[in-house]
Length: 240
Length: 240
Image 1 (cartoon, chains in turn purple, green):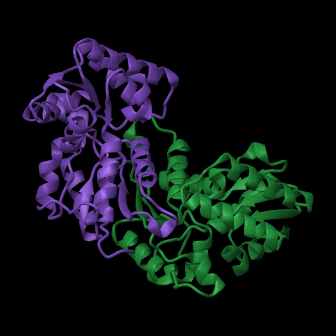
Image 2 (cartoon, each protein chain N blue to C red; image 1 turned 90 degrees about the vertical axis):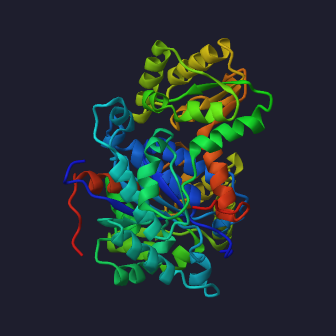
Image 3 (cartoon, rainbow over the protein chains, first blue to last red; image 1 turned 90 degrees about the horizontal axis):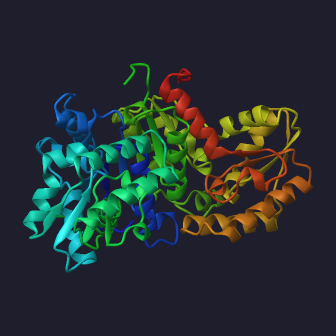
Protein backbone atom coordinates (compact mmCIF):
# COMPACT_ATOMS: atom_id res chain seq x y z
CA UNK A 1 0.00 0.00 0.00
CA UNK A 2 1.21 3.43 -1.00
CA UNK A 3 1.66 5.63 2.09
CA UNK A 4 -0.34 8.43 0.46
CA UNK A 5 -3.41 6.18 0.37
CA UNK A 6 -6.22 6.92 2.80
CA UNK A 7 -8.82 4.67 4.38
CA UNK A 8 -12.45 5.60 3.79
CA UNK A 9 -14.89 5.07 6.64
CA UNK A 10 -18.34 4.19 5.31
CA UNK A 11 -21.51 4.70 7.36
CA UNK A 12 -23.49 2.10 5.46
CA UNK A 13 -26.60 -0.05 5.41
CA UNK A 14 -28.94 2.86 4.55
CA UNK A 15 -30.15 1.02 2.60
CA UNK A 16 -28.25 -2.25 2.33
CA UNK A 17 -28.33 -2.67 -1.46
CA UNK A 18 -27.34 0.97 -1.91
CA UNK A 19 -24.20 0.40 0.18
CA UNK A 20 -23.26 -2.67 -1.86
CA UNK A 21 -23.87 -0.66 -5.05
CA UNK A 22 -21.61 2.09 -3.70
CA UNK A 23 -18.82 -0.37 -2.85
CA UNK A 24 -19.11 -2.06 -6.26
CA UNK A 25 -18.77 1.34 -7.92
CA UNK A 26 -15.70 2.22 -5.84
CA UNK A 27 -14.13 -1.06 -6.97
CA UNK A 28 -15.10 -0.56 -10.62
CA UNK A 29 -13.73 3.01 -10.64
CA UNK A 30 -10.34 1.92 -9.27
CA UNK A 31 -7.56 1.23 -11.75
CA UNK A 32 -6.36 -2.10 -10.35
CA UNK A 33 -4.42 -5.12 -11.57
CA UNK A 34 -4.68 -7.19 -8.38
CA UNK A 35 -6.33 -7.16 -4.93
CA UNK A 36 -3.64 -4.96 -3.42
CA UNK A 37 -4.25 -2.12 -5.91
CA UNK A 38 -7.78 -1.56 -4.57
CA UNK A 39 -8.78 0.91 -1.86
CA UNK A 40 -9.39 -0.04 1.75
CA UNK A 41 -12.72 0.86 3.28
CA UNK A 42 -13.99 0.33 6.81
CA UNK A 43 -17.72 -0.22 6.43
CA UNK A 44 -20.23 -0.17 9.25
CA UNK A 45 -23.08 -1.76 7.34
CA UNK A 46 -25.77 -0.84 9.85
CA UNK A 47 -29.35 -1.06 8.59
CA UNK A 48 -30.56 -0.67 12.20
CA UNK A 49 -30.02 3.11 12.22
CA UNK A 50 -33.44 4.63 12.98
CA UNK A 51 -35.44 5.64 9.91
CA UNK A 52 -34.22 9.06 8.72
CA UNK A 53 -37.45 10.02 6.94
CA UNK A 54 -39.66 9.33 9.96
CA UNK A 55 -37.37 11.35 12.24
CA UNK A 56 -37.41 14.37 9.92
CA UNK A 57 -41.16 14.17 9.37
CA UNK A 58 -41.59 14.28 13.13
CA UNK A 59 -42.66 10.90 14.42
CA UNK A 60 -39.55 8.77 14.65
CA UNK A 61 -36.49 8.14 16.82
CA UNK A 62 -33.55 10.49 16.17
CA UNK A 63 -30.88 8.66 14.14
CA UNK A 64 -28.24 11.27 15.07
CA UNK A 65 -26.80 9.43 18.10
CA UNK A 66 -26.47 6.13 16.16
CA UNK A 67 -24.76 7.88 13.25
CA UNK A 68 -22.42 9.73 15.63
CA UNK A 69 -21.46 6.50 17.40
CA UNK A 70 -20.78 4.71 14.09
CA UNK A 71 -18.64 7.60 12.87
CA UNK A 72 -16.62 7.78 16.09
CA UNK A 73 -15.94 4.04 15.96
CA UNK A 74 -14.86 4.23 12.31
CA UNK A 75 -12.43 7.02 13.20
CA UNK A 76 -11.12 5.01 16.16
CA UNK A 77 -10.66 2.01 13.85
CA UNK A 78 -8.43 3.98 11.51
CA UNK A 79 -10.61 5.74 8.93
CA UNK A 80 -9.10 8.96 7.53
CA UNK A 81 -12.34 10.36 6.14
CA UNK A 82 -16.05 9.51 6.24
CA UNK A 83 -18.72 9.02 3.58
CA UNK A 84 -22.38 7.99 3.81
CA UNK A 85 -24.03 6.36 0.80
CA UNK A 86 -27.38 7.78 1.98
CA UNK A 87 -28.42 11.34 1.11
CA UNK A 88 -31.00 11.80 3.85
CA UNK A 89 -28.50 10.86 6.57
CA UNK A 90 -26.64 14.12 5.83
CA UNK A 91 -29.48 15.99 7.50
CA UNK A 92 -27.84 14.72 10.69
CA UNK A 93 -24.27 15.66 9.76
CA UNK A 94 -23.87 18.01 12.72
CA UNK A 95 -24.17 15.03 15.08
CA UNK A 96 -21.42 13.24 13.15
CA UNK A 97 -19.14 16.28 13.04
CA UNK A 98 -19.54 16.79 16.79
CA UNK A 99 -18.39 13.20 17.44
CA UNK A 100 -15.37 13.09 15.12
CA UNK A 101 -12.32 15.03 13.99
CA UNK A 102 -11.91 13.64 10.44
CA UNK A 103 -13.53 15.07 7.28
CA UNK A 104 -17.07 14.02 6.37
CA UNK A 105 -17.49 14.16 2.60
CA UNK A 106 -20.91 15.55 1.68
CA UNK A 107 -22.85 13.60 -0.95
CA UNK A 108 -25.06 16.69 -1.30
CA UNK A 109 -22.23 19.14 -2.04
CA UNK A 110 -20.51 16.67 -4.36
CA UNK A 111 -23.70 15.90 -6.30
CA UNK A 112 -24.55 19.58 -6.81
CA UNK A 113 -20.97 20.20 -7.89
CA UNK A 114 -21.25 17.32 -10.37
CA UNK A 115 -24.14 19.11 -12.12
CA UNK A 116 -21.63 21.78 -13.20
CA UNK A 117 -19.41 19.08 -14.78
CA UNK A 118 -22.12 16.96 -16.36
CA UNK A 119 -24.49 19.73 -17.47
CA UNK A 120 -22.42 22.96 -17.59
CA UNK A 121 -25.25 25.16 -18.90
CA UNK A 122 -27.95 23.85 -16.56
CA UNK A 123 -30.15 26.54 -15.05
CA UNK A 124 -32.76 24.35 -13.43
CA UNK A 125 -32.09 21.11 -11.55
CA UNK A 126 -34.69 18.46 -10.77
CA UNK A 127 -34.30 16.39 -7.62
CA UNK A 128 -35.52 12.90 -6.95
CA UNK A 129 -35.08 12.25 -3.23
CA UNK A 130 -36.90 11.09 -0.12
CA UNK A 131 -39.65 13.12 1.51
CA UNK A 132 -37.44 13.66 4.55
CA UNK A 133 -34.49 14.83 2.48
CA UNK A 134 -36.64 17.30 0.51
CA UNK A 135 -38.41 18.56 3.64
CA UNK A 136 -35.02 19.33 5.21
CA UNK A 137 -34.13 21.54 2.24
CA UNK A 138 -30.47 20.50 2.10
CA UNK A 139 -30.51 19.91 -1.67
CA UNK A 140 -32.53 23.03 -2.41
CA UNK A 141 -30.04 25.16 -0.43
CA UNK A 142 -27.08 23.64 -2.27
CA UNK A 143 -28.58 24.10 -5.73
CA UNK A 144 -29.66 27.68 -5.06
CA UNK A 145 -26.25 28.52 -3.60
CA UNK A 146 -24.76 27.30 -6.89
CA UNK A 147 -26.98 29.80 -8.75
CA UNK A 148 -29.48 27.33 -10.19
CA UNK A 149 -33.19 26.88 -9.57
CA UNK A 150 -34.83 23.74 -8.24
CA UNK A 151 -37.59 21.60 -9.78
CA UNK A 152 -39.27 19.49 -7.14
CA UNK A 153 -41.64 16.53 -7.42
CA UNK A 154 -45.33 17.28 -6.82
CA UNK A 155 -46.90 15.88 -3.66
CA UNK A 156 -48.27 12.94 -5.65
CA UNK A 157 -44.93 12.30 -7.34
CA UNK A 158 -43.15 12.38 -3.98
CA UNK A 159 -45.59 9.86 -2.58
CA UNK A 160 -44.90 7.61 -5.59
CA UNK A 161 -41.12 8.12 -5.14
CA UNK A 162 -41.37 6.87 -1.56
CA UNK A 163 -43.36 3.79 -2.60
CA UNK A 164 -40.61 2.89 -5.07
CA UNK A 165 -37.73 3.64 -2.67
CA UNK A 166 -39.29 1.57 0.10
CA UNK A 167 -39.87 -1.33 -2.32
CA UNK A 168 -36.17 -1.21 -3.27
CA UNK A 169 -35.19 -1.19 0.43
CA UNK A 170 -37.37 -4.28 0.88
CA UNK A 171 -35.49 -6.02 -1.93
CA UNK A 172 -37.50 -5.27 -5.08
CA UNK A 173 -35.40 -3.85 -7.92
CA UNK A 174 -38.06 -4.60 -10.53
CA UNK A 175 -38.51 -3.34 -14.07
CA UNK A 176 -41.70 -1.73 -12.82
CA UNK A 177 -39.69 0.25 -10.25
CA UNK A 178 -37.37 1.40 -13.05
CA UNK A 179 -40.32 2.41 -15.23
CA UNK A 180 -41.90 4.27 -12.33
CA UNK A 181 -38.71 6.16 -11.56
CA UNK A 182 -38.27 6.97 -15.28
CA UNK A 183 -41.74 8.47 -15.35
CA UNK A 184 -41.00 10.58 -12.25
CA UNK A 185 -37.81 11.87 -13.88
CA UNK A 186 -39.75 12.70 -17.06
CA UNK A 187 -42.16 14.77 -14.96
CA UNK A 188 -39.29 16.91 -13.67
CA UNK A 189 -37.92 17.34 -17.20
CA UNK A 190 -41.36 18.36 -18.50
CA UNK A 191 -41.40 21.11 -15.85
CA UNK A 192 -38.06 22.53 -16.95
CA UNK A 193 -35.26 20.51 -15.35
CA UNK A 194 -32.05 20.70 -17.44
CA UNK A 195 -30.43 18.03 -15.25
CA UNK A 196 -31.64 15.62 -12.60
CA UNK A 197 -29.95 14.56 -9.38
CA UNK A 198 -30.79 11.03 -8.25
CA UNK A 199 -30.51 12.26 -4.66
CA UNK A 200 -31.29 9.02 -2.90
CA UNK A 201 -28.90 6.06 -3.21
CA UNK A 202 -31.74 3.63 -3.86
CA UNK A 203 -32.63 5.41 -7.11
CA UNK A 204 -29.53 4.55 -9.21
CA UNK A 205 -30.29 0.87 -8.51
CA UNK A 206 -33.22 1.13 -10.94
CA UNK A 207 -32.78 4.41 -12.89
CA UNK A 208 -29.97 4.71 -15.45
CA UNK A 209 -28.67 7.47 -17.73
CA UNK A 210 -30.33 6.15 -20.87
CA UNK A 211 -33.81 6.40 -19.29
CA UNK A 212 -33.62 10.18 -18.82
CA UNK A 213 -33.53 12.86 -21.56
CA UNK A 214 -31.26 15.24 -19.60
CA UNK A 215 -28.00 14.52 -17.73
CA UNK A 216 -28.70 12.28 -14.71
CA UNK A 217 -26.36 12.73 -11.76
CA UNK A 218 -26.23 9.59 -9.63
CA UNK A 219 -25.34 10.62 -6.09
CA UNK A 220 -23.95 7.11 -5.53
CA UNK A 221 -21.58 7.34 -8.50
CA UNK A 222 -20.48 10.84 -7.48
CA UNK A 223 -19.63 9.71 -3.94
CA UNK A 224 -17.86 6.58 -5.21
CA UNK A 225 -15.64 8.58 -7.56
CA UNK A 226 -14.78 11.09 -4.82
CA UNK A 227 -13.96 8.20 -2.47
CA UNK A 228 -11.55 6.67 -4.99
CA UNK A 229 -9.81 10.02 -5.56
CA UNK A 230 -9.38 10.67 -1.83
CA UNK A 231 -8.37 7.10 -0.99
CA UNK A 232 -5.79 6.86 -3.78
CA UNK A 233 -4.27 10.24 -2.93
CA UNK A 234 -5.35 11.84 -6.23
CA UNK A 235 -7.08 14.54 -4.18
CA UNK A 236 -6.05 15.84 -0.77
CA UNK A 237 -8.39 15.45 2.17
CA UNK A 238 -10.39 18.61 2.93
CA UNK A 239 -9.61 20.39 6.20
CA UNK A 240 -11.70 19.84 9.33
CA UNK B 1 -33.15 -4.42 16.43
CA UNK B 2 -34.02 -7.66 18.17
CA UNK B 3 -31.69 -8.29 21.14
CA UNK B 4 -30.97 -11.82 19.91
CA UNK B 5 -29.41 -10.41 16.75
CA UNK B 6 -25.66 -10.58 16.39
CA UNK B 7 -23.20 -8.42 14.47
CA UNK B 8 -21.02 -10.20 11.95
CA UNK B 9 -17.44 -9.01 11.55
CA UNK B 10 -16.24 -9.45 7.98
CA UNK B 11 -12.56 -9.64 7.06
CA UNK B 12 -13.09 -8.49 3.49
CA UNK B 13 -11.47 -7.20 0.36
CA UNK B 14 -9.95 -10.59 -0.58
CA UNK B 15 -10.87 -9.99 -3.33
CA UNK B 16 -12.97 -6.84 -3.46
CA UNK B 17 -15.71 -8.04 -5.82
CA UNK B 18 -16.01 -11.28 -3.85
CA UNK B 19 -16.72 -9.30 -0.67
CA UNK B 20 -19.39 -7.24 -2.41
CA UNK B 21 -20.89 -10.47 -3.80
CA UNK B 22 -20.92 -11.93 -0.26
CA UNK B 23 -22.64 -8.85 1.18
CA UNK B 24 -25.22 -8.81 -1.64
CA UNK B 25 -25.99 -12.47 -0.92
CA UNK B 26 -26.40 -11.80 2.81
CA UNK B 27 -28.88 -9.05 1.95
CA UNK B 28 -30.75 -11.20 -0.59
CA UNK B 29 -30.99 -14.13 1.86
CA UNK B 30 -32.50 -11.94 4.61
CA UNK B 31 -36.26 -11.83 4.91
CA UNK B 32 -36.72 -8.07 5.19
CA UNK B 33 -39.47 -5.52 4.65
CA UNK B 34 -37.40 -2.39 5.39
CA UNK B 35 -33.81 -1.31 6.13
CA UNK B 36 -34.11 -2.11 9.83
CA UNK B 37 -34.94 -5.80 9.17
CA UNK B 38 -31.51 -6.40 7.63
CA UNK B 39 -28.42 -7.67 9.45
CA UNK B 40 -25.62 -5.45 10.64
CA UNK B 41 -22.10 -6.22 9.48
CA UNK B 42 -18.83 -4.53 10.33
CA UNK B 43 -16.71 -4.92 7.21
CA UNK B 44 -12.99 -4.27 7.01
CA UNK B 45 -12.75 -4.20 3.24
CA UNK B 46 -8.96 -4.48 3.11
CA UNK B 47 -7.51 -5.50 -0.25
CA UNK B 48 -4.04 -4.59 1.05
CA UNK B 49 -3.68 -7.84 3.03
CA UNK B 50 -0.55 -9.53 1.62
CA UNK B 51 -1.21 -12.09 -1.11
CA UNK B 52 -2.23 -15.38 0.51
CA UNK B 53 -1.16 -17.59 -2.38
CA UNK B 54 2.35 -16.16 -2.57
CA UNK B 55 2.84 -16.56 1.19
CA UNK B 56 1.78 -20.22 1.12
CA UNK B 57 3.85 -21.00 -1.95
CA UNK B 58 6.85 -19.63 -0.11
CA UNK B 59 7.86 -16.29 -1.56
CA UNK B 60 5.53 -13.68 -0.10
CA UNK B 61 4.91 -11.64 3.04
CA UNK B 62 2.94 -13.42 5.77
CA UNK B 63 -0.67 -12.14 5.78
CA UNK B 64 -1.27 -13.57 9.29
CA UNK B 65 -0.42 -10.39 11.25
CA UNK B 66 -2.65 -8.20 9.04
CA UNK B 67 -5.56 -10.65 9.35
CA UNK B 68 -5.06 -10.85 13.13
CA UNK B 69 -5.06 -7.06 13.46
CA UNK B 70 -8.21 -6.72 11.36
CA UNK B 71 -9.97 -9.39 13.41
CA UNK B 72 -8.98 -7.83 16.74
CA UNK B 73 -10.25 -4.41 15.59
CA UNK B 74 -13.56 -5.90 14.41
CA UNK B 75 -14.01 -7.55 17.80
CA UNK B 76 -13.15 -4.28 19.57
CA UNK B 77 -15.69 -2.48 17.36
CA UNK B 78 -18.50 -4.78 18.46
CA UNK B 79 -18.55 -7.84 16.19
CA UNK B 80 -19.95 -10.99 17.81
CA UNK B 81 -18.50 -13.42 15.29
CA UNK B 82 -16.10 -13.34 12.34
CA UNK B 83 -16.31 -14.52 8.73
CA UNK B 84 -13.88 -14.21 5.81
CA UNK B 85 -15.25 -14.33 2.27
CA UNK B 86 -11.90 -15.74 1.12
CA UNK B 87 -11.14 -19.46 1.36
CA UNK B 88 -7.35 -19.22 1.24
CA UNK B 89 -7.27 -16.78 4.17
CA UNK B 90 -8.44 -19.64 6.43
CA UNK B 91 -4.96 -21.15 6.11
CA UNK B 92 -4.02 -18.37 8.56
CA UNK B 93 -6.92 -18.92 10.97
CA UNK B 94 -4.60 -19.71 13.91
CA UNK B 95 -3.28 -16.13 13.77
CA UNK B 96 -6.84 -14.81 13.92
CA UNK B 97 -7.87 -17.12 16.74
CA UNK B 98 -4.82 -16.10 18.78
CA UNK B 99 -5.80 -12.42 18.48
CA UNK B 100 -9.53 -12.72 19.29
CA UNK B 101 -12.02 -14.33 21.65
CA UNK B 102 -15.09 -14.48 19.39
CA UNK B 103 -15.99 -17.37 17.04
CA UNK B 104 -14.45 -17.49 13.56
CA UNK B 105 -16.86 -19.26 11.20
CA UNK B 106 -14.97 -21.54 8.80
CA UNK B 107 -15.91 -21.26 5.14
CA UNK B 108 -14.10 -24.58 4.64
CA UNK B 109 -16.06 -26.53 7.27
CA UNK B 110 -19.34 -24.96 6.18
CA UNK B 111 -18.75 -25.70 2.49
CA UNK B 112 -17.84 -29.34 3.12
CA UNK B 113 -20.90 -29.66 5.33
CA UNK B 114 -23.03 -28.18 2.55
CA UNK B 115 -22.02 -31.05 0.24
CA UNK B 116 -23.97 -33.40 2.56
CA UNK B 117 -27.09 -31.22 2.14
CA UNK B 118 -26.82 -30.51 -1.55
CA UNK B 119 -25.48 -33.91 -2.73
CA UNK B 120 -26.36 -36.43 0.02
CA UNK B 121 -24.98 -39.46 -1.83
CA UNK B 122 -21.76 -37.85 -3.00
CA UNK B 123 -18.66 -40.03 -2.62
CA UNK B 124 -16.19 -37.90 -4.47
CA UNK B 125 -15.90 -34.11 -4.29
CA UNK B 126 -14.10 -31.93 -6.83
CA UNK B 127 -12.50 -28.70 -5.64
CA UNK B 128 -11.86 -25.55 -7.59
CA UNK B 129 -9.61 -23.34 -5.47
CA UNK B 130 -6.38 -21.37 -5.52
CA UNK B 131 -2.97 -23.03 -5.72
CA UNK B 132 -2.18 -21.81 -2.20
CA UNK B 133 -5.42 -23.15 -0.77
CA UNK B 134 -4.92 -26.58 -2.38
CA UNK B 135 -1.25 -26.73 -1.37
CA UNK B 136 -2.26 -26.13 2.26
CA UNK B 137 -4.56 -29.15 2.14
CA UNK B 138 -7.32 -27.58 4.27
CA UNK B 139 -10.11 -28.62 1.87
CA UNK B 140 -8.67 -32.09 1.31
CA UNK B 141 -8.53 -32.69 5.08
CA UNK B 142 -12.12 -31.54 5.55
CA UNK B 143 -13.51 -33.67 2.73
CA UNK B 144 -11.63 -36.79 3.82
CA UNK B 145 -12.70 -36.27 7.44
CA UNK B 146 -16.29 -36.29 6.14
CA UNK B 147 -15.67 -39.71 4.55
CA UNK B 148 -15.49 -38.58 0.93
CA UNK B 149 -12.64 -38.64 -1.57
CA UNK B 150 -11.20 -35.61 -3.32
CA UNK B 151 -10.85 -34.86 -7.02
CA UNK B 152 -8.21 -32.21 -7.65
CA UNK B 153 -7.39 -30.14 -10.74
CA UNK B 154 -4.35 -31.25 -12.73
CA UNK B 155 -1.31 -28.97 -12.67
CA UNK B 156 -2.37 -27.45 -15.99
CA UNK B 157 -5.95 -26.96 -14.81
CA UNK B 158 -4.72 -25.31 -11.61
CA UNK B 159 -2.57 -22.92 -13.62
CA UNK B 160 -5.61 -22.04 -15.74
CA UNK B 161 -7.72 -21.60 -12.57
CA UNK B 162 -5.24 -19.04 -11.26
CA UNK B 163 -5.23 -17.13 -14.55
CA UNK B 164 -9.01 -16.82 -14.33
CA UNK B 165 -9.08 -15.95 -10.61
CA UNK B 166 -6.45 -13.24 -11.03
CA UNK B 167 -8.34 -11.78 -14.01
CA UNK B 168 -11.48 -11.59 -11.84
CA UNK B 169 -9.50 -9.88 -9.04
CA UNK B 170 -8.30 -7.35 -11.64
CA UNK B 171 -11.92 -6.63 -12.56
CA UNK B 172 -12.67 -8.95 -15.48
CA UNK B 173 -15.84 -11.00 -15.00
CA UNK B 174 -16.07 -11.93 -18.67
CA UNK B 175 -18.07 -14.61 -20.45
CA UNK B 176 -14.72 -16.12 -21.38
CA UNK B 177 -13.85 -16.44 -17.68
CA UNK B 178 -17.19 -18.18 -17.11
CA UNK B 179 -16.59 -20.53 -20.01
CA UNK B 180 -13.09 -21.30 -18.77
CA UNK B 181 -14.33 -22.06 -15.26
CA UNK B 182 -17.12 -24.25 -16.68
CA UNK B 183 -14.55 -26.26 -18.61
CA UNK B 184 -12.43 -26.72 -15.45
CA UNK B 185 -15.49 -27.95 -13.55
CA UNK B 186 -16.31 -30.36 -16.37
CA UNK B 187 -12.79 -31.79 -16.07
CA UNK B 188 -13.38 -32.62 -12.40
CA UNK B 189 -16.75 -34.21 -13.22
CA UNK B 190 -15.17 -36.30 -16.00
CA UNK B 191 -12.73 -37.67 -13.40
CA UNK B 192 -15.49 -38.75 -11.04
CA UNK B 193 -16.61 -35.76 -8.96
CA UNK B 194 -20.23 -36.18 -7.73
CA UNK B 195 -20.25 -32.59 -6.46
CA UNK B 196 -17.99 -29.57 -6.84
CA UNK B 197 -17.02 -26.97 -4.28
CA UNK B 198 -16.32 -23.52 -5.71
CA UNK B 199 -13.71 -23.08 -2.98
CA UNK B 200 -12.53 -19.60 -3.90
CA UNK B 201 -14.92 -16.65 -3.60
CA UNK B 202 -13.95 -15.28 -7.01
CA UNK B 203 -15.34 -18.40 -8.72
CA UNK B 204 -19.09 -17.90 -8.03
CA UNK B 205 -18.78 -14.48 -9.71
CA UNK B 206 -18.51 -16.29 -13.06
CA UNK B 207 -19.58 -19.93 -12.47
CA UNK B 208 -23.23 -20.72 -11.77
CA UNK B 209 -25.22 -23.90 -10.97
CA UNK B 210 -26.59 -24.34 -14.46
CA UNK B 211 -23.10 -24.56 -15.97
CA UNK B 212 -22.17 -27.70 -14.01
CA UNK B 213 -23.67 -31.20 -14.37
CA UNK B 214 -23.34 -32.07 -10.66
CA UNK B 215 -24.32 -30.04 -7.57
CA UNK B 216 -22.13 -26.93 -7.31
CA UNK B 217 -21.49 -25.65 -3.79
CA UNK B 218 -20.64 -21.94 -3.81
CA UNK B 219 -18.49 -21.22 -0.75
CA UNK B 220 -19.70 -17.59 -0.89
CA UNK B 221 -23.37 -18.59 -0.77
CA UNK B 222 -22.72 -21.07 2.04
CA UNK B 223 -20.96 -18.43 4.16
CA UNK B 224 -23.65 -15.83 3.42
CA UNK B 225 -26.44 -18.17 4.52
CA UNK B 226 -24.57 -19.09 7.72
CA UNK B 227 -24.00 -15.38 8.43
CA UNK B 228 -27.71 -14.61 8.11
CA UNK B 229 -28.64 -17.51 10.43
CA UNK B 230 -26.14 -16.44 13.09
CA UNK B 231 -26.90 -12.73 12.80
CA UNK B 232 -30.67 -13.18 12.98
CA UNK B 233 -30.45 -15.56 15.95
CA UNK B 234 -31.77 -18.54 13.99
CA UNK B 235 -28.63 -20.42 15.01
CA UNK B 236 -26.64 -19.96 18.20
CA UNK B 237 -23.02 -18.86 18.00
CA UNK B 238 -20.55 -21.73 18.32
CA UNK B 239 -18.37 -21.83 21.45
CA UNK B 240 -14.84 -20.46 21.51
